Image (cartoon, rainbow, N blue to C red; front, side, top):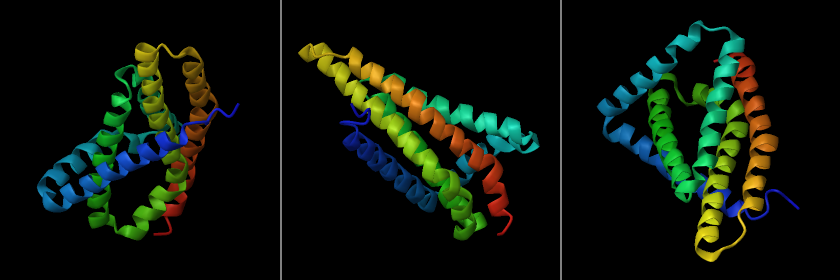
Length: 187
């Protein structure tokens, strides 16, 4: 059986929720540049110590951080998928603000070059995690109120996490740590 069977619409739902929050973040940054600057500054300060770390430590941090967020998006299924939706909304909004603020500071070509190589792997992994969390929340709801099986779906979600999401996060973290800095030097 295909472990992705039935998840496609939840994957796309996750993309749509994230995109809506992302554009809301961009709009907020344009309408409230003072607020955007505070958030951008807080994010920059949070990650500033990483600049002093070795590439191996940066790789580990990125991998662990992304995997933890993906894990939380799935494991909060007991909130009937609302945990995943919250993670999508908060990440989309903050990334939208940071994206708009970065365009103002660094320009679109540099931003695209810095985000695209790892983003084409990292974002689908994130959407798959969130979609799996929403789907699993629905399956829990069906278990509670319709007495439908749940364990088989939970096992499927675990397989997706370990055999798809973790490997994708490893690849994305490697690209973000070792390849993206090389690409950015051309700008």
